[in-house]
Image (cartoon, rainbow, N blue to C red; front, side, top):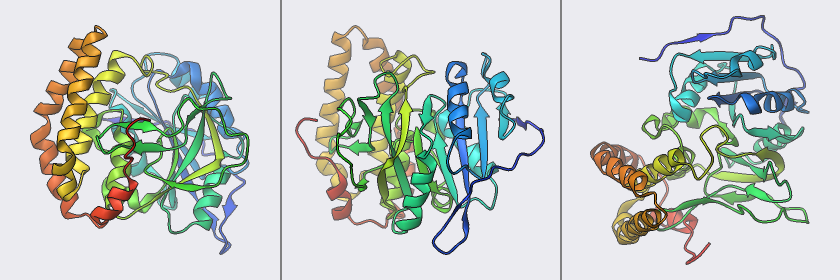
Length: 342
């Protein structure tokens, strides 16, 4: 059982609230889940303090960091610090914060500690939410923090094979203005969710620990009929896997490729599961061969072994998820990427 303690400092009221078209104040709780993010937190939190529209509250969940993260957070009295006694992962950390969020908050904004929001980041998300009530999830434009002329991503793509990647990753930032558009799901490094839909679906799958958990969440929300809008005016600079050794680390490889299999098994609906299963199995085989040739066979084999060991539990989850599905097979098919290459 995980225990945690709030930092009991004086409550600070964050101002500059955004009003909806009806005149009501739009309240949002912003959540950051941190583990040993000392090198990023000062910049991340300073950027939040400079937002043109500030969140109703900021909750930072610290997953038992061993660096100076807590000391940095304590320098920001507007931030509510939830200190955990063990590393529960990104999924569990977010779920705890969502449960603890103010009951008056209609929206939950997520931000990674290695994501640095531009001043109008949150305002753009909230304005998009207010003017697009048919959407319940909103994603940001992420720029590469080291090379801001390049995109880190503009939402997540789910391929028919079960492979996932960030839309536009590594591409030059468009020179002309972009229009908001629907995407499969947002990257949770900088995103906004209607709180009621997160509560309805039970939040993130905590078995994932981290990696692909945001795609899984987005997929499950889409199966329930909820949609995601990409908001190009909402911009954040993202390092990416800043505290886990980088996107190509053994940690990222293990969790990413274990969770890819689980996401396909849980969420691919109806006959699409059986239709696309051979392609998904081929993807897994190619992945194993590829990483073995790179000298990383032990990690990829362990990831796939543990994915298979977890299949009975994931199949039970699948039965509940598919029983609750609202979206039609055709609607899901239209949202899947079908390109032969990226």
